[in-house]
Amino acid sequence: MAGQKGRDVLIKIGDGGSPQAFVTIAGIRAKTISLNARAVDGTSAESADAWRELIAGAGVKSATVSGAGVFKDANSDALMREAFFSQAARDWRLVIPDFGTLDGPFIIEALDYSGDHDGEAAFAITLASAGALSFSVL
Image (cartoon, rainbow, N blue to C red; front, side):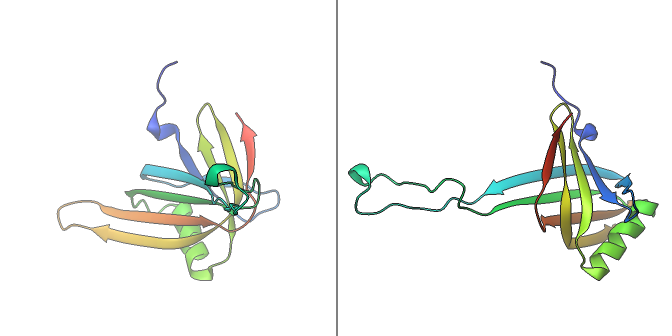
């Protein structure tokens, strides 16, 4: 199997419409999608040879998404800014090529803007899942 292009990993924000349309975050260069499932330890004095026992399905699942890129002042930038200042959960779509999509509500935890005097204006964003995510195979 051939490797996948990193640029094909997409972070999209919902426009709030009905039906929901998703807008790709413009100018994003680097992106990371982290899926987490916290384990719950059910070990007791009765555990065989004192081996740890985990309780299946009892932990908290979460997702964290981060990205950074060149500020483009596009429609997606306005949607991100609005979502940050309202701190309301918005629908987001994460596209992982040849794997699938994750859809669901996220809150923007951090939105950074930066720029050097001899370089481009840049931004960085961090999202935290704010509810159940759904997965669809591509």
